[in-house]
Amino acid sequence: MNDIEQTFISVLEKELTVATGCTDPVSISLAASTARYYLIGEVKRVDIIVSANIYKNAISVGIPGTNKKGLHYAAALGIISGDHTKGLEVLNGVTKESERLASLLLEKAEFNVAISHEVNPLFVKVILSSDMEYVEVVIEEDYDQITEINKNGYTIYRSNYSKLREVNSVLDNIDIKNIIEFAENVDLSKILFLKEAAEMNKNAVLAGLKYSPGFKLGYTLNLNETKTGNIMLDSFLRAKIYTAAAADARMSGMEIPIMSVAGSGNHGITSILSVLAVWEEEGLPEEKLIRSLSISCLITIYIKTFIKRMTAFCGCGVAAATGATAAITWLLGGDVKQIINSMQSIIGSLTGMICDGAKESCAFKVSIAAGEAVLNAYLSLKGSYVQNSVGIVGEKIKDSLINLGHINDPGMKETDRIILEIVRSIQGE
Image 1 (cartoon, rainbow, N blue to C red):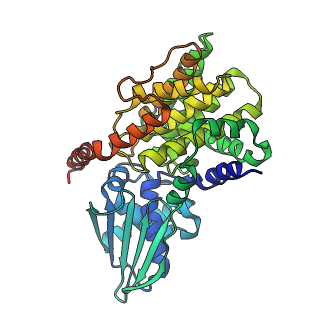
Image 2: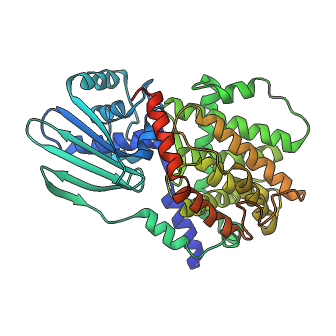
Image 3: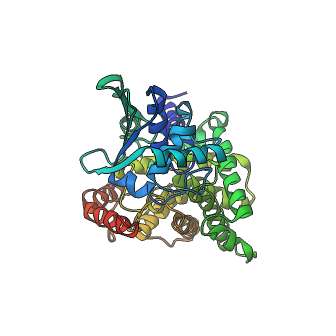
């Protein structure tokens, strides 16, 4: 195994993570569950300090296994029934009794939530206090990356490890061509786990179609699905149905595992299920699916090194859709030039779709992203794409990605602030 092959396999293993529920409230549950493990005595007070982005993404989304929402409840459920050893699956196995006890804790203990603007964009601190002592747990940069645990003012755990710095460092000098060459040549046995990722996320689709949760987008799109005889349009609709149904299930709080990509379950839904939908419609060999999934996931991760974990625009509409369209173009027989052309089209069209927090309506954005990923792959093969050096689209794909980074930060900082203000006002805060 050469160095670059090992690099890509390592990145995939680090950045594909199983998560049950939306990762933002689940991160709060993980911090609270960890703090409870170290705290002696009955919990009397809970302080939750989060970055603006975490607050925006945790306030309105369903908490897995319940019909509840909100930061307070995420923390309470983590304290009552969370298993801190399970990482982002901390809330697996929530019962009606644990829901009842979490609600009771919310009545008995004092809960406080604060937003800090002086921290990492992905930041969670939970402080649990009893009559005897207090424990602080800090999560930074990634949803399951605990960086500090303090007890009664003494540090009992501290880590300077950063998965993101490690991933960014190893991807710093690669390009799209390297990713394509890896996908085409890697021993298939080394990336078979991507098939399992596709199967996992397809199960979320089936749950969404069966139970019609959330705003029922996937279920409704599927009601009158008919074959048009146009493979591009049939693939387009299937991708929209799959991603919408999975997002409906996930964002409404159904207790289903999702293979997340680059820290986001919705990125995993978009980058994996869009490709799966086209593969199914086209009736291609399984090997093509697995290799194309490696392209989709790696390019999504690569793009996130330019625009960071937390963004003011929808990461599914920019990063995951761009990774998916690249993979679909390859799946359909496209060369590197056509792959890059399809990526430029996504950047030139979907950039600007804002992130106004994680919630059930994310299914609509995810579905749009998936549909455009499919269309732009087919269009690129037919010679229709956004040309280079037009608008924010640079002469080369890396120029476009650098532009995306600048648009996000510092470009959309004020936009993000105003979005948060609006979200808080709607929530009555």
